[in-house]
Every structure is written in structure tokens, then in C-alpha cells.
Length: 244
Image (cartoon, rainbow, N blue to C red; front, top):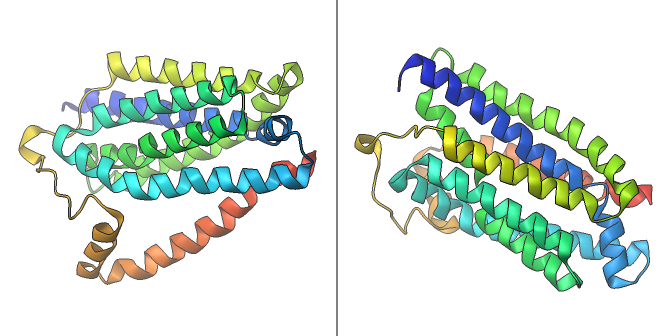
């Protein structure tokens, strides 16, 4: 990939992550209200369902993320990123049209199955980065993540005044725009010479965790990230319920 194409690809990944996280942030302020409407219960009961919805998304992502990661090693990063974006679009549409709480779980499970946009985008950045600019390029993903979480909830809170489902339509439209943008513009980052065959031993959570034994220095880092995510997601998945 030429230097010009690499710069364009980095810009696309930044925009992809920004739109992706903005879409995620848009629905955060209104999920409690939608859950409360669907279960016809109080906020305490809605918070319990919200916790289970988060769990459904997380456990399916835990199972399927290694599979999608290995598929991206075999078929390239581009198709997996596009599949993830399309899957999130369907998820948001399911949430928007959900007649019962059951459909919210279907949508979250679908998002967990296809939700590999961030990890695959990180692999994409690693493919096109040199040792000198890798940290800077990965920093752009972090910047997009933070900016999306600033913009998204603000938009979601504003759109929520027009109905509890309106933000989900907006998130679906954003993801579909992102998908189309990637389909027509995003080049592939992983050359055919660097691809490897799908291996079921690596494409499952247990196998992925076992492979860490080969790199003992990563165990402490993984534990730190694990604890960080527990703390941050405990807040992210519950704080909006306290605003109702």
C-alpha cells in the first residue's frame, strides 16, 4: 500500500471508529427508557434487564471475537470490518422496532456476534503502521473512541426528546453510512502473502487465552485491562439509569 493510501486508510479508520462509537453513544441515554417501556416495570427492574442485555452482548463477543479475528487473518481486515458495521446497523434497527424485550436481546446478541470493528480496526492499524508511527496511529483510535463518547450521548439525549426509539434510527443510519463509506473507499491492509489459514485452536476463547502462555509478559497487561474494563463498563452500563 502506498504512503498516500496508508494516510487515507488511517483517516478512514479514524472516521469509522468515530461514527461507530458515536452510534453506540447515541443509544446510551435512551436505553433505560426503552427497556422500561417494554417491560412495563419500574427503573429498578429496567436496570436488571439492562445488566442482562450488557451481559448478552459481552458473552457473545467473548465467544465470537477470536473467530472473527482469525477470519480477518484469512480473508483480510476489510470484509470483517464491513460485516461488523452491517451487523451493528441491523442491531440498531432491531432495537428501534423491537415490540418486546426479547427482541432487544436478539439485537444485542447479533451485535456481539458481529462486533469486531474495534479489534479488527486495531489489527488494520497494525498492518499499515511502521514501528515509528504505530503509537501515534493507535492513539488516533483512542481519540476517536473518546470523541465518539462525547458526541454520541449528547446527540442521543437531544433525539430522545422526540421519542425513545428515534436515537436508534439515527444510530442505524450512521452505521449504514459507515458501511457504505467503507465498502467504496476502504482498501485492504493485509496482503495475501501475510494471510494465514483459519485455525480452530486460535479461533475460540479458550485457545486464545492459552496462547498467552507463550508470552508471559502479556499476562499482567491483560489482567490490568480486564480490571479496567470491569470498572469502566460497570459505570457505562448503569449510569444512565440514575438519570431517570
